[in-house]
Length: 175
Image (cartoon, rainbow, N blue to C red):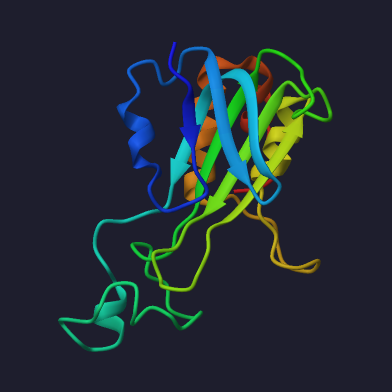
């Protein structure tokens, strides 16, 4: 059994190369606190990353430099900045899983722009409803809650194999 890894960086497409991607196994994920290891299985994942750079069109230059001309925070080029979500079912409880949670929701905000670092977050939950809540995004305390397309895709994958997540996904209050 191979140790499967997801790094806090823009190069995670390599996880698709694992022949046993959705089978139980040892996982190593990376966040601000360091590396976390656990035994479990990936049950859902999604990304908002696109192949084509849209910022070149926005700045009116055909040959705009990927990763350079998208520095402006208002620039929405999902080939330069994107989000990833991974939902795991934890099959053993250990010290890296402080809540002894049944689920791990791992989110990343990779960037290929020089000087920017990948933002990451690891959260543990005990129910499908907590997973649903962890996948829901809010902008500030007054903004409406919403479910990004990548998160909805990961949740739908997880719902297909986990009845608790399926119940929370079908009965969700956000679109």
